[in-house]
Length: 512
Image (cartoon, rainbow, N blue to C red; front, side, top):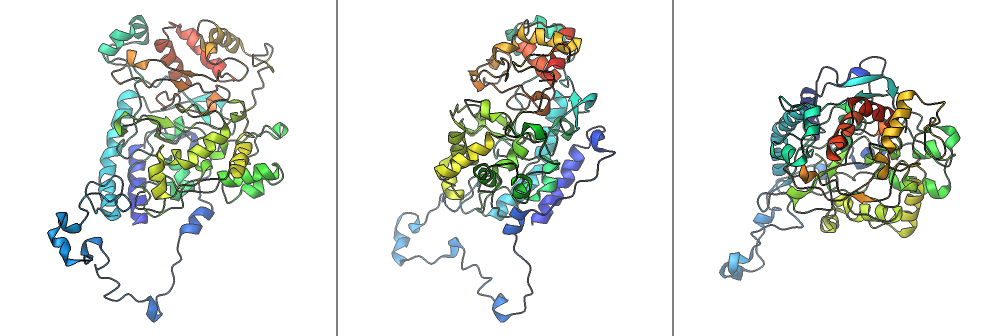
């Protein structure tokens, strides 16, 4: 069953995202990915053994349906005269899958339904993306991420026929909304009813346990962060990237970091790479992995303390249809951040780590967590996890001085002009002040002025340090490139930046 699901999903993903230039940057000069041994997968995979002992053979009793709840003999014949004959005819929370459409639904029924719907779900999402974006990436010839992946250049947004960026800039928000012309509406989860964490294929190739049978990742790889991402430690800045080209996991964390971290930090890293039950990956029928799973680790989502743009749904909103898509944020520079989570405004790394394990792993629902495997961590281990997270640093920015501003003799004229736009006409510095380009606040952009969807309300400001390595942008990934992000804010804030000023601004963002 698991093999069939992986084959079906892999074939569809290959067909759906086989755009001409999506993988152009990996086509030559890069060895094909091979999945290394995965201790988490090994731990949950039973071994095939010969069936040659008598006690191993299954008889008619073993294979009968007597074990089904619907076949259970009642404790009393008197139940026939009671309401519903003493049976629970509705949903039984501890037994039935959470998205079951009828009581007593089996995992196999849910699995077959979701697998059957998956091609249409992803085809629908691809059509939506292609209607909004040009998904053929244009790659920068000279700007790369820390480990060499070229960044994609935009803008990618498709404007309505007869519309130009200049005409949009001349319209007021109400006109843009009434004519449905805003080029960056909210980006939805491909399958809202199921929601949950979705991993990109490049990560699933290495860790097949992260494959879902109901939905695939939707944004082409060229618009995502590099994999594996670089790792920078604020306690050892002289080392630069310490990832050594590996994805940190339970398999290699000790070998890679035993000489770089303190025992407390190393134990925190152990916790961050240990899988625990999660909403879509767990041992129960309430899962979206073909086989029962130990779960996911913190650094499955925050790969190498960074991200590969995995997405899920905001855990802070109900009902389900009101929740919005949420990208995984980088942990780089967490030591300088005073509020955590897009909506929850948690005030310490410790609180966030504990809350994430207890409820956010389960979409903000500790009722689900109690069923699937709530993980209550001791405060000692929580502190260790926080200590480790506080070690992740942002990438070096050699053109910035200690105050966070450009060193004139190191910067180009375009970058210097971009800095002037950033702190001047662009008003970016109001929410992203130097040196960390973060104001520790939450802001409401009031996007309902421009779109027909309700606004998202206040969202925390994210740091712009190392921003070129964290595409796609905005909390839901609706802006695929930095150019798209500049276009977005030019409209939302009514800046009326010229194209040249926008180009300067992108040049500055690339060196932060």
